[in-house]
Image 1 (cartoon, one colour):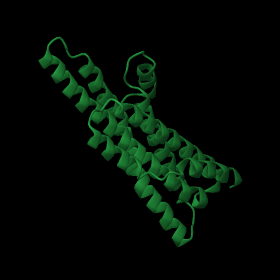
Image 2 (spheres, one colour):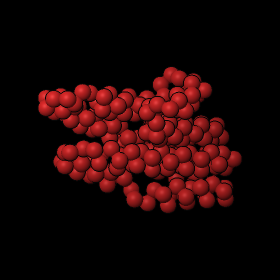
Image 3 (tube, one colour):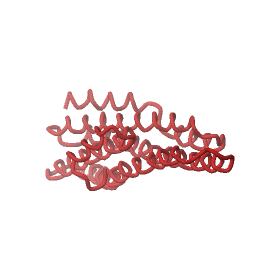
Length: 205
């Protein structure tokens, strides 16, 4: 999703084409989660707060704002990346040279279609950790928005991870697979649990 309206984006999503798809939606989930955190930070900072709490909220805001922009761009980039896969699949494969060229093009396309959701996953993981700070220190009246942000970011994270796992199956480069897996392994394994904790914490604010 670049500068499309929500109406146009949803129409494209429902149109029966390969793109935009789940990877684009994953990034958009993350972008909306980051935007919610920004909103809660700004609402909370309108009040007189202890200095340490104010600084924590400003730190969350400073990190959430660029993540929102990054993820919005990743939503569009994911569609472009997977469109590269679609175009590579359409390449001719009648001769040996054509088959080789098609195989190489598919490998490159699937690499890009894996890198993009990896960036989405890493960004969504960060948003969940930011939400933990905000659910404890942000404005209580906006706690539901923090819970919504955590769950939306978790949906983005899990969807992006799913896309990575599926796209990696089509790569023939074992070294590339290991590199991507190492990146995935840097994501904390307990984020499902953390997002659930934030959800329950929001209910008690």
